[in-house]
Image (cartoon, rainbow, N blue to C red):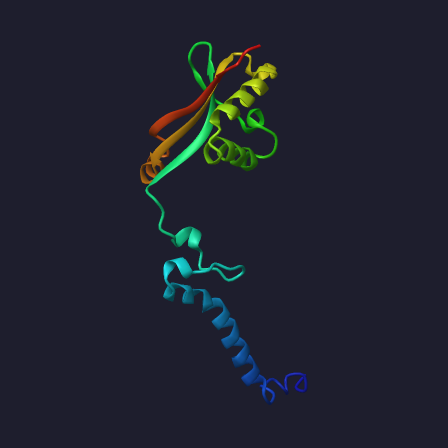
Length: 162
């Protein structure tokens, strides 16, 4: 039993290698902090070592969201699910809506296409009109109250005709 624990100490050069390895790992982990020394436009985020700009970047207080709603016979407003808005996942449909309605400035075309899709679906038989809406809201108020209250603008609307 005594022979097994006889050679417990460091071998020649092991301490140096361990110290160099530890210093290299520490330098790699702390290297993203160097980004804070650069001007904001020159900062670069890189995987796997990140300075997390998604959390540290200055954000506008005002934010806007573009979405589509269905207006029912009795005047009610329904949030249309992503399946009614197009094919693909939620983010894909949301990006498509934003691209066509806002960036390409064709909200009428999007509303017309949406109305044609809604009319062919039996799930939305009570929807008589679709609207493409953009709401501007205060981000701080939204996060603290957990409600999106803001100024809404109807960008386009289209009648759902059977």
